[in-house]
Image (cartoon, rainbow, N blue to C red):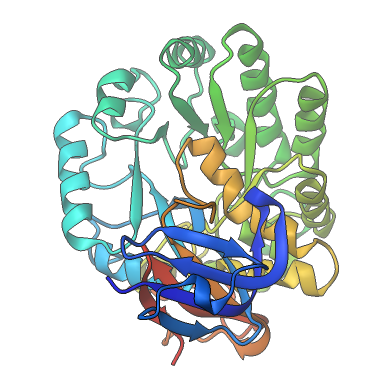
Length: 430
């Protein structure tokens, strides 16, 4: 590979506290050779390719901690190739994939298959999860040690929660001994069964079963209580309510070590956006009140929430064009993750550095992977974007195989221009 130098860039890398105009040199092996404001053209080799960024923003490639890939079993919704295309067009270079495929990823043979297939078909960095329990039934834990040794990054039952407290205690105890990452979906089944949107005025008006925020809060309280006894690597996949934040703040103030994620959907939408049964906005956890959305943004700002995820969930149109109660749960979002997050910068809710931190170095630290940074010697996974370019989200041009975006027609400000993976240009905005 030919050496490259990217010049005239505003470089933002929270892992190194860098926010300055400068250049970045990519060596022949696709690694970051030099970075910063003091880098000149003659620091690169005479044969280096010069790429002028024209004062646009250069950041580490985004690390998305929660996305669904349809292989195996749901290739008609998404596959490794289409997921890769969608991710790279959104500046995402590393993806944590979910195990709720068909068959479910809960054994060594399935792990070997998914890693081999991903290596052959995907063009992004894949970090697969296995299920927390066998067949995601919440009863018998999977073989954490064996599966981790084969390349599993963490364990989650995705949209399901381990309901039995004794089982969860055993899981956390075992995870504590092995040092593996547990990723919990926080939702009490008895308080949420048959529910499909936030419990309140909107659910009553639409005649739909609601899901109380207490269902989320009660599981978080339970698990964080268990964490005192079994201090494992524990991550709350996504929260949706200001009441959950109160519990999280109390426990973080008590120096308890755990991490928290939030979906970009819950940061940018509320239950009013559902309107008259817009099924593309049926997601889990559900969209809640505007007060909840504002509290979540404040939670990111204060550091109570560590990461923002796309919760990319492709669903075919037939699964969404149903009565709201029967419609599938989920929305795509991996290629609009950064532009939608930038709304919070433009409306002065969050700093640009905070947004980038939650999308790059923070998830990398939680996952214990060497991504989300442009430190010298790291892989040159890079996202370059225009902070101010306006555009309108249209479903058809999106790269995902499914088109179930929750934000079609939304006007955004900020667009990905280029994505580099291991130093190679893999996406360029035409």
